[in-house]
Image (tube, rainbow, N blue to C red; front, side, top):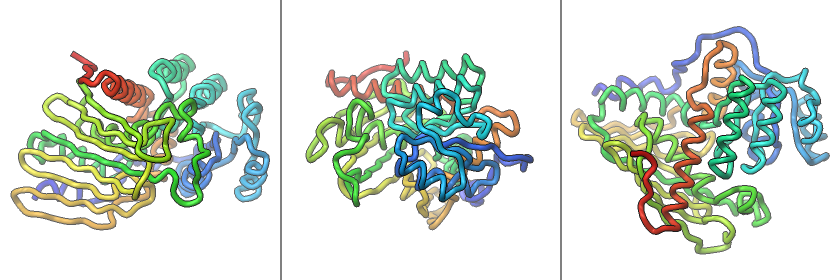
Length: 354
């Protein structure tokens, strides 16, 4: 079973050349994800280290400074250039509408950037963000951590080699209970001005971008429907959308309420693959592969893809390489998602490219 041979090494870093040095990272935005997921991943990395924290909350700055023995500053000081001698690159993890000014500030200081997805809340703002980095000559990576997961990278190699035959369909879903646990309705993800959108922008982008990456193809048309059914009212609570690629169609769903789950599947003329627990950070995944040669199930596969994301970014900087999920990659997804919203409003398919 050639497909299994090509993806059997689920932890191999195909990009790692073992360079010397470390990249000092400033983390701009120390909310729950930045502080509790991204900072530990940076600290665990081989090629990066956390040296500066940026937050608008004095208590957070004090707590982070004490916990990690790093310098901390507020957003105004960061924009004005405070502590630029203490970091080499910036990770932006603030609400979506704040990405543009925070990336522009990093670019103005000559610092490379890895920016959370979606890059911004409109196509125009996302394009300005990308162009600010291009004009300053600094590296910009969109934080698509799935593109650095060794399992996903092996799958892309297998798809590119034709080991599933011709891929004709993709299916993806991502449900994230944004109100679960101690989280309440007073959060930026549910604020239409700060988030720009809901289920589509926050979690629907994962199956969209990962499928684009696996197929190495760009959408040509989209259809979509958004709706609310519960406490989420300013942004889309649920979204179902269809993306047509050359030769294939992706059908995706995302929601901000209900039980958290995620999966991604590809159907080809010679085989199928399904990845369970596909998009949540720090999850042990299950991969199911079926071809004419048989069926195989691989459990608890892969690495911590958040750590992989930051090590990959730092490795690119240390070796003078451009990251694969660059700013233009992130811009393409914003263009596609805005087309999905347009299709929802119009009630018809929207073309993206001839």
